[in-house]
Length: 486
Image 1 (tube, one colour):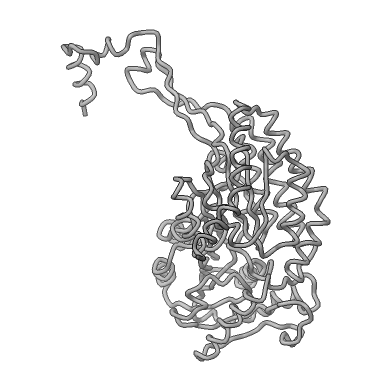
Image 2 (cartoon, rainbow, N blue to C red):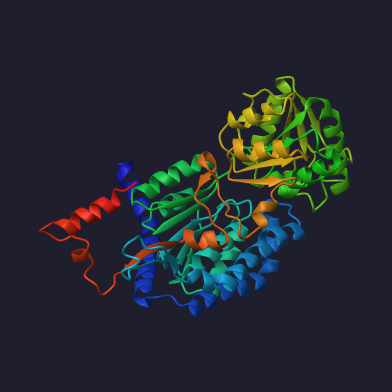
């Protein structure tokens, strides 16, 4: 008796979303060609509403995280949402232009012409995560709208206050036929991922992505998956340790490490280990003299995430690893009032099969492993699933080339971390378990467009001239001979 009720429940959840999907698709088809002016107007409305609601977004993000600074939210969620829309607005006219392509001989001599025109896909679904909920909703929306599409959004249930503000923003900025948003828990996400979109973008965990991809496959919906993985940091013997660690720890402590691109573990020369540890301590002390009552240091998003990371630390201690919590003020993190903060914590030489080396951390824990020969670092990275990013610090050109050519990752930063995502014209995406497909800038416009191949034939009867019409004869043989010539 319970099974039919569950099926009906899913149908009830999907019903309103399917209605909006049908409405958006119908309106898209009715609209016809989407002009640059219409696309720019939709982007401008997105820019205006994000700027208007910035204070509400900052407040909501602080509520959802229980502690997240105004500056972090403005930099990583508000500004990073506005900039992609401004970039798309500036460049979309050139992106929309047809691309000429070479026409094969002899059709080119006979007047044939080839080109590609980028056509909107239709309705694009967006499932956005909790760590940067505004940026990872509005950022993709910049590319989706620039490409002339409609959009439906499912934000994370882990940031309910922010999702509520985004729902206000969407309803104020766009008609539901242009952009719609659906809040709710896993059951809404499950129904949403099974809708017959023209494309689906999911940002989140690899484990969840398997379910998303399976649901999308039932309707043959193409997907872009932005996942994560364990992004390695290779520190060369030629690196400036103090400068390098300063940049690494900035990336590791921003949003308390709750970033898909955060440095996940360090590979350092064995003789540099002590120097690296000291540099980590100094870098954290400079950025966060205290943490418990410091609004600059972000809290974990929820109890489940907090408990998971503490469980990893407990395992490391049980296995005899040296675990160093970096607490400049010597605070007692067991005594927290309304927050779930974990200090930046180093785990020295953990075993390869430990959870801190097997699972994506998504928090302020930082394992450090040492190496004797540089090739060990390349072999270690290649022995593990392909990450979203790889980071190299050093001045050795051969080592840098080895990292770039002998390892595979979604992206790479040389002598810094995370900063490549701020380059709007660098495609952002993973490879293998860290994702598929990419967006940002012109690449994002193409991701959410259909590249339509167009061939324009000349007035000549090319098929007859080439002997392609029966009865076949000498002209046919000449064409075949020409085509098979080495």
